[in-house]
Image 1 (cartoon, rainbow over the protein chains, first blue to last red):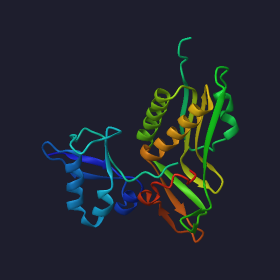
Image 2: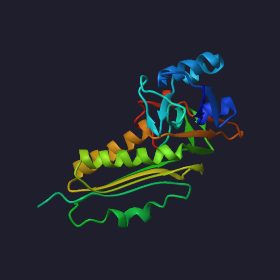
Image 3: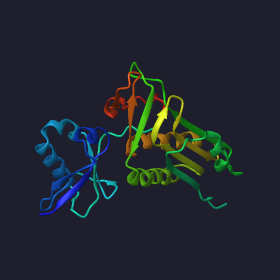
Length: 82
Length: 154
């Protein structure tokens, strides 16, 4: 099973001390499923992960949208631009 | 008269934003109103002094979303000229972080389009600010706490 490279930004990048993390993909994985898996794998970051949106190929994904290893995937913490 | 096409300029930049510099982009003989929102780095946040702010962007996603917001604003309001600029990198107090400027036929549409643009930027553009405090420590702004503070500049 191949891995999904997940880009990190802002507080998540600091907490993971990495610009991305690798997540083992699962059959029929969804954006919501990816977030759940990350929260299980990294319980210390669960509070930060729970408020993130998932971006797939540079667009916000709905929880049920599929996520594949070829996709560009990123976690989007609550934005604070402006 | 057919609906004139909107001219749009959208940029994500590491260079300083010069407010005067965008005025030529707003020139349009058919527009009777121009509105301008300028967001600047403020010297305090939630009771604490702020020395500077680092803006981090997911640039590959931020710019397309800014363009989408520009298109959406032109669909919703009769906008003839629209400029949306956002800074990234290290900004000090007084620096311009974001700019939304609109030319429209009348003032009501111009104000509403400008307001729509900045509000949507603050909702959806993947940019984050990390405040540097006078003691040198730095922390990410918790956007969940800031939501609804629509009076906050920038």
